[in-house]
Length: 272
Image (tube, rainbow, N blue to C red):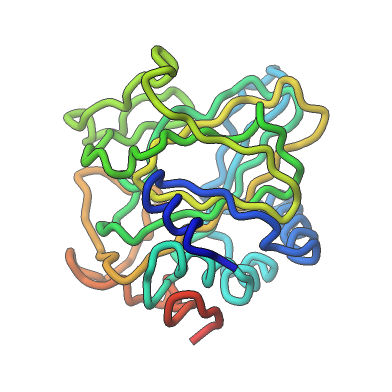
């Protein structure tokens, strides 16, 4: 499913589009799971669009243990094999899922950020697979700053509601204003059809436009994955997700039932 060019693109750019890897049955099952999810949101669900504003931007995460469609995708879909091959990892653990929905006409952008500082995980073999459940035209696709996963910089996590740094992260470097000088960076984005996905490194800087020009929803099912060198880390601030009650110590492998081992040997799938 993944060839040498895909691996080279991911290694160089920190983001790669993989085409046609998921059949319609997976998309339909996840779409039903999303409806179930937002009919009964989890404790971390959030709405980013102010009341009275057009559209709607909202999300939720860490519901895979209670929503069968999410669990099946994490443990049995091609996703684990794809990310194992791209990260050149002999093992892959599922970290969590994150569902993001933008209704047609939504003005709110997803601000520029990178994910890894939000998480209690250190390591380089860490990535996300962003799977849209709807066609995504180029103008509505997330954008990724090519090569930013190798900058060696750690930007402060900030809330999507007011874009303020997390309490305790104020001394970290702010995210660069990519929009102020977009020509200074190579920005990657793709027009996506059902079955396509984007895999990106957790340190890759990215953001996403609103959906003001769309007549359809933009539902994305994003899954987070941990490879061989991922280790538990403690931050000075509350991580997102917080994962309360973990007994891991800093530097421990992510060996916990909340993070099941899904892929074993690069490029092979299947629960173990």
